[in-house]
Image (cartoon, rainbow, N blue to C red):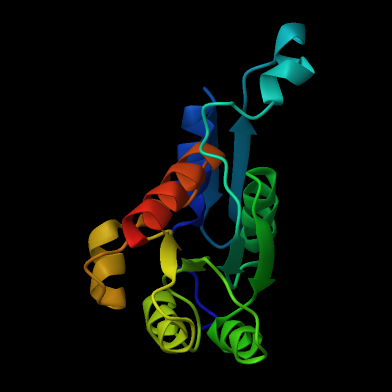
Length: 182
């Protein structure tokens, strides 16, 4: 709590590299640091609306999905992506909120959860939810390396998507979890 994971700059760098960009860092002890981010200019054709449409190759779905993520921006992005894939989506900011939703009578086909959250880990929360819902499918999202996520989570059957994730990675993982769990 109140401490970063140290992954922020690594994630930014990874995203920039994937986009063909780079980062320049200038640091002066006692004065701080400046990070300049450089992205390639987009050609007019790249701005075409067709370039941003969802691929028809993505596994589309139906059913109810619960997204549990303590970071607002990541939670909002996941909800948007999952609803674009055809699912009905609800969200919770932590394990306690998710449990409250399920205890109020809501049912879900799939839970998409962060692995490491304050208060209760994603795998611990899913274990509890499975007592209430039965064998609900789960996909975990993590900024940690998979070995660290597994160690913290304790669930050998994790279907995991690494941050930063794409809609393709999320759709594939959700499909895998739903098909495997049936």
